[in-house]
Amino acid sequence: MIVGPLRSLSARVPGAVRRIVLTMKPQVVFVLGGPGAGKGTQCAKIVEHYGYTHLSAGDLLREERGRPDSKSGQIIDSYIKEGKIVPVEITINLLRKAMEKTMMANENKFRFLIDGFPRNQDNLQGWTREMDGKADVKFVLFFDCDNEVCVGRCLERGKSSGRSDDNRESLVKRIQTYLQCTRPIIEQYEQQGKVRTIDASRSVDEVFDSVKKVLDKEG
Ligand code: UP5
Ligand code: MG
Image 1 (cartoon, rainbow, N blue to C red):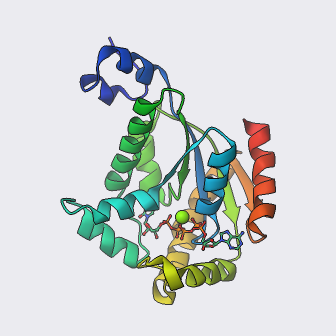
Image 2: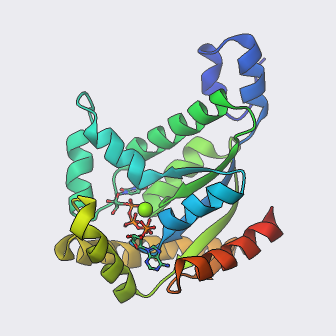
């Protein structure tokens, strides 16, 4: 019998590849923090220095929204503009596929930074339902940043990003969602001793110095 973290792959891949993929259990670091806290920026730097693959849930959703034949495109679009959190079935499916694809391409790529997820109870329950026992959550990297600083960064980026949610109206809603829905998730992990908090209001390099200290310790 075939057992392993990504068993759903078993029907679709040839034996040799299957054995490799199914023996590796994804090692996950959740990366959380407010809109504009610097999650994406820091993940890009981590990837340069450590053996992680960066998966931004927001980027995956935006990519899916842009696919002409996507069944979820419209729903994703409306949720993102409103700063609301997309139903977990959509997000988890994208995350799982991205992990599978990465591990299929390279057996050594089983360490993932999952950026911007889980953001609410629905996300967390979906993750537990689908991934419990199939992936290990090592810890949560929490970029703690003042809301005003976050908004300022996103508005500045909004001058050129083309992101439909980098405007003041969406940002008010994104911050609200973050405070009401995501902070409680971070607190839940905090109670399990799994949160590594970084002061993210400093410069990119200063923040990364702190990130390195955490990763060098945690491996
Ligand atoms: N910048 C970064 N670090 C800086 C620093 N230290 N000093 C000065 N400037 C700094 O950075 C933002 C901007 O700030 C950039 O211009 C950067 O140069 C500068 P970035 O690294 O992009 O920050 P990040 O935290 O990644 O900000 P982002 O806007 O991506 O965060 P959000 O969490 O809001 O966005 P995300 O893409 O994750 O989600 C968008 C939406 O998708 C959500 O609102 C939601 O509607 C939906 N979503 C879900 O529904 N479910 C999910 O699981 C994920 C997303
Ligand atoms: Mg981001």
